Length: 147
Image (cartoon, rainbow, N blue to C red):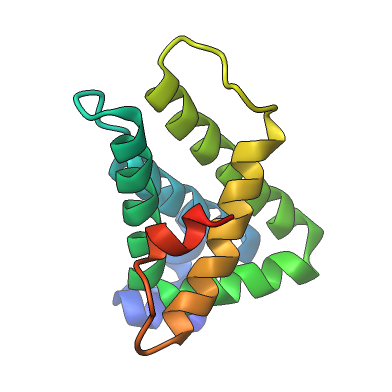
């Protein structure tokens, strides 16, 4: 917490005033990132469904690329810490469901609910591999579409 306060240019006491623990800080940080991701991946209803999906995936994976170091650490931590894994899975599920609902409108998905979560998980795996490669063979959205 001392390093975070120093990098933010605030006192450690002020940081603890707003975030009483590292866990609270971590949860708030993850929530802020999830909200940013939500805003960026909002489907554009003026586009055909396939273009909405491609755009949302491209933006999703682009966000991961922008935050690749932190994202990779988050995914590694999610594999080790159950609470973090639950938070990440919750964000994935809600993001995938919201994108699907945005594309389908009020219609019911043609696949069962786990499909969007599986695609989001595939997207995470693909994004981690893609951000580690200096010259990806295809765009991130095209890579994930194969999943």
